[in-house]
Length: 148
Image 1 (spheres, helix red, strand yellow):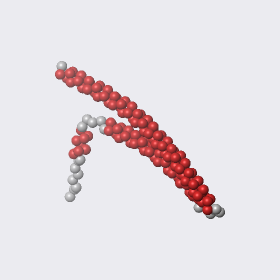
Image 2: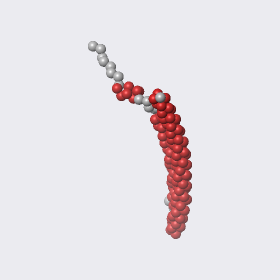
Image 3: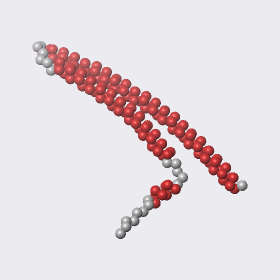
Image 4: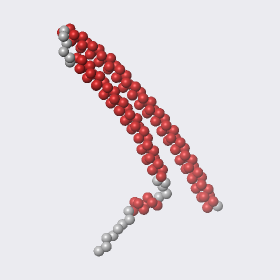
């Protein structure tokens, strides 16, 4: 017995509708491109933060190596620990400032992307409105010509 095949009714229904799907494809591509740009900003920030953390860890471990050495005089232990503590505080302020610079850069890049995206969306919307106006005018002219 032969197997019956059926056409997808939704496919034929949508094929008959006068919808320009390229608009949706363009919107999807634009959204993906914007997402890629924002992801690039976030990944660059994460990479810079990882570098700062790595350097901070290496510096701290190097300072701990000095702390762990045997001292000849018991008073030297307090001096080494004091030096370690003051160096750690200084390093912390430097690294926190580096993190702040990364955050500041991310903020500036994000605002720049948002501004560029807003301009692109505005230009695209303007083009769509102009095209719709031309299409509507043409449709009215055709309808008026048929009525006359």
